[in-house]
Amino acid sequence: MKARVFAGLIALVAALAFSAGWLTRGWFEDAQRLTEERAARLVADAATAREADIAGIVEERLAELDANERVIDRGIIREIQQPIYRNVCLGDNAVRLLNDAAGRAHTPAEPAAALPAGAPAAD
Image 1 (cartoon, helix red, strand yellow):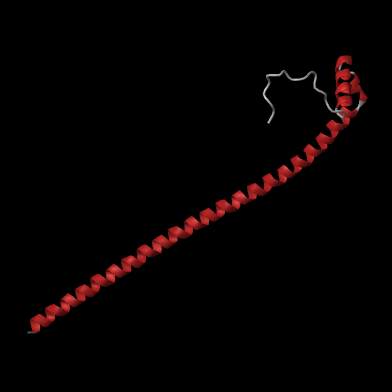
Image 2 (cartoon, helix red, strand yellow):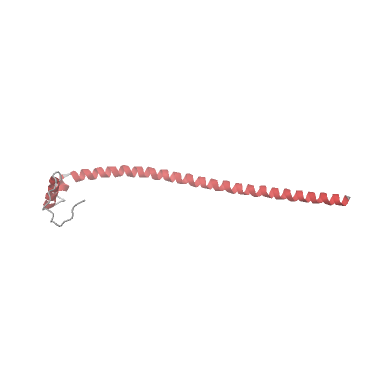
């Protein structure tokens, strides 16, 4: 009888040792996974911060370019309004055509001739 109790105790101790080993191995693997996840999160946060800095620099540069674009547009308008560009760059015929077009812009256009009898009606 003592041998059976002793064998039962040994089996119980072995089962407890196996369970404890299994449990501690699980804790160890969980700790490794947690460390990996934290490292990955740190890398992702660093990349996000770096990209946010770059985006801020790009936005500042685009704001400067927009301001330059407005200044350039105003300069072009001023230059085109000067008489030398209208009188020298365009020939007499071109200036005449522009003046005729500007004069006709306010009057409605009249059709040249009546439509033929077989023409389809407009919708």
